[in-house]
Structures are given as C-alpha cells and as structure tokens.
Amino acid sequence: WGEVQLENLLEQMLTSAQYEKNVVTRPGRSERVEFAIRLPGRGESRAPCWLPIDAKFPLEDFQRLQDAQDRSDAAAVELFGKALEDRVKKQARDIRQKYVEPPHTTDFALLYLPVESLYAEVLRRPGLADLIQRECQITLAGPTTLAAILNSLQMGFRTLAIEQRSEEVWRLLGAVKTDFVTFGDLLAKTKKQLDTVSNTLGDAEVRTRAIERKLRGVEALPEAEAAQLLAHDQGSVIDIDADPELDIASPTPDKGL
Image (cartoon, rainbow, N blue to C red; front, side):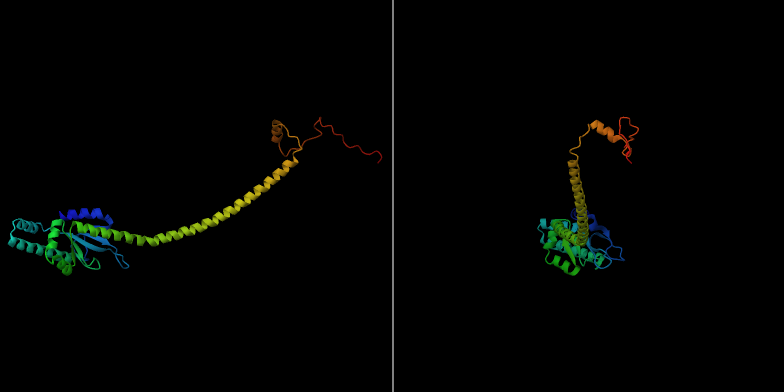
C-alpha cells in the first residue's frame, strides 16, 4: 500500500522522465529500489545520479503501539515503542546497504512512511530521526514532507533546464541577428532598385507630357477608325501608284535644260 501511495505522489509531482521504478542503483548488484529520482549526472558520461526512495510501513508494530496507548498501558507503550524504533532503524540500514552508492547515487536516501500519524510517532521518539540521519544517511519523510521535497526538486529541475537551454537560446539569437543583418542589406538593395524604377517612371512621364504637348495640334481620329488603322501591319508601305484617289503629279523636267 505504501508503494502505491508513493507512486501516486511521484506521478503528481514529477514527470515520467524525472524518476523510474524498480531501479538498480548499485552497479553489479541485483537489489532494486522501489523508486529513484533521476538527477543530472556529472562528468563526461553524464550518467544520471539516482536518489533512492523506498516506502516502509511497519503496520503491526504501529498498531500494537496505538492499542497500548489507547489502553494507557505504560509498560506496553514502552515495549512496543522500542519495537517500532528498532524496526525503523533496521529498515533504514537496509536501504543504506542495498541502494546507496555514490557517485552512482546521492549520499543519502529517503525512507517514506505513508501515514502522517506513523511519521509523527517516529519523529516523537527521542533522537530517532537524528540517529537514522547521522548513522545511515537516511532521511525520513511522511506524505506532506515528501511532497515538499519533491516540489523543491521540481523547481530545481526547472532552473537547471533553463540553464541548459540558455546556451541554445543564445545561439538562436545570434543566428537571428545574422539573418536580420542579411535582411537589412537585402532591403537596402531593394530600395535602391525601387528608386531606380521610380526615376525611370518619372522620366517616362516627362516624355509622355512632352509628346502630348506636341500632338495637341493634331486632329484626333474617331476611335473606330483609329482602331482599324492601328490594326494594320505596322511594317506595311502605302503604294501610291496603286491608289487612283491619290493623284500626285510627277515632277516635269525643265525644258530649258
């Protein structure tokens, strides 16, 4: 049950790429920790560094202690309280021996207690949490505490992702700057060409107005007649001799010569 609750909490707080299930955290060993958070590795290999998390739920010891407390049986409370302490210390040592091996892992692991009342009871045992932290390098965590730890890790992941992408973003901005300079040069060339075209159009407009002024004294033909005339072959030559209506006298030689 504790493993299921732990998995649900990890799914809510982290992405699937940030943790794995049933991980061999110590090379050459067969023991698999229930869950391990993938932290960024160091060195050239960039292999991940694992943070082991194992859920433990000493249900029988905890229930005996609660029953003794309900009966106000001081002797039983002392007995079962000591049994719960021994159980948690043994579980912490097992996690340390099976799953912690720097630099493949962090130098500590998390022991998850899935019930807040159990976690509170363990913390109430004088010196127990400090002893486990100091001798076993194991951090105890209840549901609320683990959620806070995972939230802090998630913020760290986001900061790291921004740092890793910052160089890529900088290169992208450099490429955009280069393209923008090229675009500016192209825009300047285009403007120059447009200015040339504008000047040419201006010259053509001046010539057009000059031609119009010279043609003002010429009588314009009707549109139909003008269209018919322009439709003829522009390269044809009018045969004057073949046209009877054109009676143009040939020059007469001077008799005095």
